[in-house]
Image 1 (cartoon, one colour):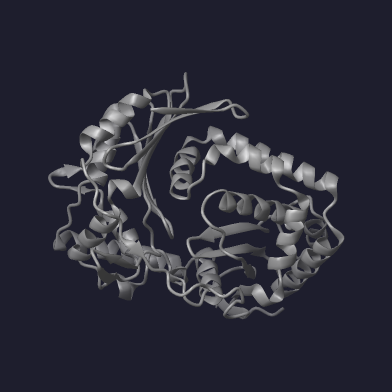
Image 2 (cartoon, rainbow, N blue to C red):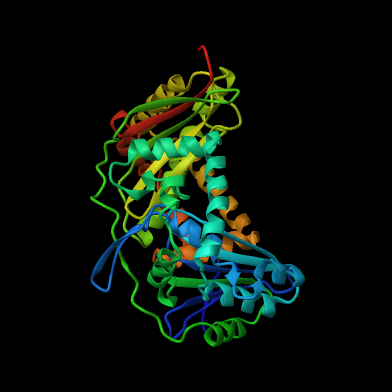
Length: 426
C-alpha cells in the first residue's frame, strides 16, 4: 500500500486501489482502543437522473435514502443484532450526494469489518419488505415536515435552485416513495454500488494490509461502469425567489439566508473555495465579529446564529441563519456589513487570527474518528487529499475572502426563508 506522511499533522495514511476499483484508506492510530470504519458510495438523493448502458433512467425522489434503509437486510440474518453481539455501534446516513455505512468498536474489529462489507455488497430486496419499509420511511418524512430546521433548508433550496435536484428533500415525499419498488432499488444498486464508485476508510490501531485483504476477499472481483449523472441545466447565479415565509409551531421566528456561488471544479479549487468561504463567514458573522456583537447586543440574534459555505455537484452557496425577532433586518445588516468588509478590507491581524483558529479547529477534529473516516472517503471522490489543508490555509489571503464577499453576498444572489410562529406579530 502507498504511504503518505503529512508532516504538519504527524499523520500517516495508507492507501491502495484494489483490482476491482475500490479505494481503500487506513489512518493508523497506534495505542487507541477505538476503531472506526466507513464504507461510502458516491451516490445520494440528487442522483435521480442518469444514463446507464446507453439508456436514460429517471427514478423517484428518495431512492438513495430508501436503499440505505434496505441494505441492512440479509436473507436469514439480523445485521443489527450481529453488530450488537460484537459490541459495535453501526450507523448509516444519506446526504444529497453520498451514502455512508459505518461502525465503531473496541473489539472484534475484523468480524465487524467483514459484516460491514458483506451487507453493503449484498442486495436483498423483496416486494414485501419494501412495502413494510415504506411505512417507516413515510413516518420519517412526516417527522421532517414538523421540523422547523428541516423545513427551513427545504424552503431555501427550493427558492434558490431552478433546475438542480437538491430542490427536493433527501428522503423524497410520501408520493414519490410510493413509486419505489424492489426493482427500483436493484437498478440503483447496480448503477451506483460498484467498487469503482465506492471507498473504504478505517481509522484506528489496525493492520492496513489486513484491511485491504479483507476487502479484496469479500467484495466482487470486478466492477461495472458507473452511471453518468444528470443534474439538469447549469444553475444561474441569480436566485429564483427572493423571500418566502411560512408559519409553524415555533416559539421564535427562525430564518435562513442563502447566496448562490459559482461551482468550483473538483480538486484543489474546491478545497480552496471551501476554506475561503468559511474564513469569509468567520470574518463577517463569527462570534468575535463586529456584526455578531452588534446584532447580539441589539437582541436581534442569539447563540443559534452562524453560517458558512456549502457545495454539491452542480450547486454551491453561502448560507447563514438562526433565530431572530426581525429576520429581514438581520438580512439587511448582513448585506451591508459584507459590502463594508469587501470595500474597506478585513484587518490583516484579524484575518491571520481567524486562519489560525480555523486551522486549529480542523486539526482538533482529527481526533473524531468518524469525521476523519468520512472526509477521507469524500475527499477521494472530489479529487482532494483531505489532509493537505494546512498548506491551503497557509496560502489563503484576506484579499480572497474580501473578493468572496464582494462577488457572492449580493441581494441579487440572495434568498431568505423565514418561519414565523403562528399568529406572530412583529
